Amino acid sequence: MSGENTNQKTADRLRKKAVLMRLHKKTLEQVRDVTGLSHPTIISAYKRFMEGGWDALVSKSSGRPVGAKGLKHYSAEDAFARLLSIASPAHILGSGPFWTPELVKTWLGSTLDEQLSIKSVQRYLQELGLIDSDKFEIVRSEVLKQARLSKTPTIYVSGLRDISVAGQTFYQFYLTDLRNSSRWVHFKERPTVTELIEFLDQVVETNTNSVVLISRYPFIRRYPEFCDWCDKHAKEIEFIDYDRVVHQSKSNALQITTIEQKTKSSNGKVSSGDNMPLTHLQRLEAESIQIMREVVAETENPVMLYSIGKDSAVMLHIAMKAFYPSLPPFPLLHVDTQWKFQDMYAFRDKLIKDLGLKLITHVNPEGVEKGINPFTHGSAIHTDIMKTEGLKQALNQYGFDAAFGGARRDEEKSRAKERIFSFRSADHRWDPKNQRPELWKQYNAKKHKGESIRVFPISNWTELDIWQYIHLEGIPIVPLYYSAERPVVERDGSLIMVDDDRMPLNEGEIPMMKHVRFRTLGCYPLTGAVESKATTLPEIIQEMLLTKTSERQGRAIDHDSAASMEKKKQEGYF
Image 1 (spheres, rainbow, N blue to C red):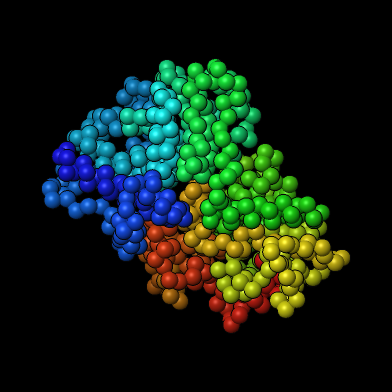
Image 2 (tube, rainbow, N blue to C red):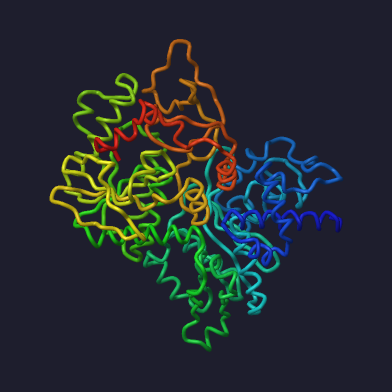
């Protein structure tokens, strides 16, 4: 590779890193200190990204077009989807437990008869997000810098991340060292704690030097078997939380402890970085945690409403943090209309099982008996009976006096006027003209007999905040939020996905296969998709930066009549 091309790639990588840091609310000075780029260059890179996406940051090459000598028999997505379906290279190549670019090159040649250079293989791996992931770039750079300063022989950055290839989702543990070499293991299903420990055993067995792992595995310290493993290998491996690296990189508070230092020191602790200023997302998170703790302290029987969407995912993630290391001291409640997407039900059941939470599922028996559905009865009646009445039934049946909800003020005008602590009468009705002031974030949770409270911990968040937080925290979400080819029909200007055989097709109506995703999720006959190519979180964030429409434009229940959402809320809707 020529020196000119090397410089171009370095410049591209730095511009990309600068944009990522700006998306994470970093100041121009912070970006300049990390990347070395000037303020005009950072501003120009961000402007180019806003106008043309990630491709606009890539320097134009004067040589052979990229991919001119690429795969001949398969598309990149098909070839690497087959690769990701193979658990370990040891099964077919007789090698060690980890995949490397060199082993991928060997597999492509022996299995698919695709003869590529190692540079071409690395390029494909980078394009698909299997190596040099953007979400680890800032962390990796900081950790490797600290490793050189502390003269740690071997250092790895690792985390559990999801990868979307050919419409399928895979999971990967990724390793990189001071020489920038890459190794990984991947899974077709989200790995368990047992599989993580097996992976760590393999890391220790294949390294004679000290190892530092940056952990992005959600709530991993909650599992006693993991803690026991860490205690057993305390002199061989050190774990540092991902957030600690991100939040302390500016102040150089991160400390890497070598084996020799561990032997001499009894604690080996990492600086807490308490003097670091909070980022925008950290302030939002802290506010939400305060609200949740306040409700638990002031009410007798709270519950968290769980609708399986992205806002519920963020709210649940914050609840897990707020009461860690214990589980949240309240159950989840899903008011099921029986018309959710099949992917939503599968995601809900797996997540609840993985986290060990209590889930209450309530279906309005009267609605089921009458056969209420969105096709024959319309969205207004379906929503009122299956959602509003179903929710009131569940709250009365279990005696909940406070219910957390994931509504945000930027979603819709009636939600914009509602307080964070929204009081409801004994009949669960909301009076928008009788709301309590919430000055200086002081909340009054005292209520009259029979009253209940709907509490919205993420009310001050925006849709962009939600997506950036999901990206930063590695929060799992329903695959429907990612673009994939799906069967849809166009009705009233909306693309409705044909999710199962209960959906009646109009005469002559034939489902079309389109690349679509969902910005919001509800009952599938009432939720419109948007055409999109965004298969990763950075691509979704880019769409959010450029879009000029509300995420709820595809929700039919918001358009039943003028001020329909406010009327629903007054009647007891979520």
